[in-house]
Amino acid sequence: MIPENILTIYGRRPVYEAIKNQSINVWRLHLATSNKPTKDLDKIVKNAKNRNITIHYHTKRELSFISKNGRQDQGIACDIQIPEMEEYREYLKNIKNKETTFLFAIDNVTNPQNLGMIIRSLTASNCGGIIVTRQILKNISPLTIKASAGAIFKSKLIYCHDLSKALRQMKKHGLEVYALCPTSEESLETFKLKKTSVFILGNESKGISDELVRETTGTISIPLMNGIESLNVAVSAAIVAFAIQRM
Image 1: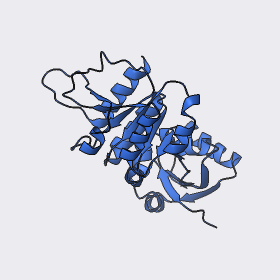
Image 2: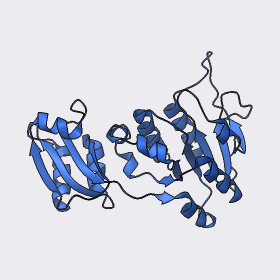
Image 3: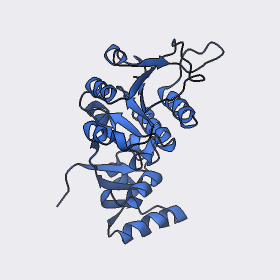
């Protein structure tokens, strides 16, 4: 019987991270018969067998139909059951027991590769959580997972239906909310993290919506030189996350 909420992912690193993670339900592993033996591939197959995951072998062409991205699947794909995520109200119930940390909220980032790179950088920085909406979840695709190099399976995604409402509730629980704004007088160089805070990442072209800006405690900017006005949202996320991590 096919489990519900199945997603087919591809690429050696994402597949390895999914199979290695015992909390991820992996239904089937798909391999191209043209794959040459490598240590990475051996590790994937060994882990799959240890978990009793069904392994199917296909021609490269057949696999491309399964992955729907023959150029980037690296001869490997697997079917996973999308895991459930913590809802933001559940997170807030335990906020008093958590150490001061930082979270990021993603506001309508639509490019799947940007989304994957953001998740990868934020997970590497050990941020306390990544707040996502239903629309963002729709944008999480196999390409997003590949761009995250499988980091999405190690990340802490926090779900909300309405980001504006979620941020409002978080402020009521004592969290501060900041928007990244290139014209802000508060620079990342002088900013100090005093309490658990949420940093909003905006859309690639439109930035952060006015509705969310109204929910902020303040704004911060990344110092830029040589007349550069802005950075790619994934680059901005990485810079801010690792700067905050060192505070």
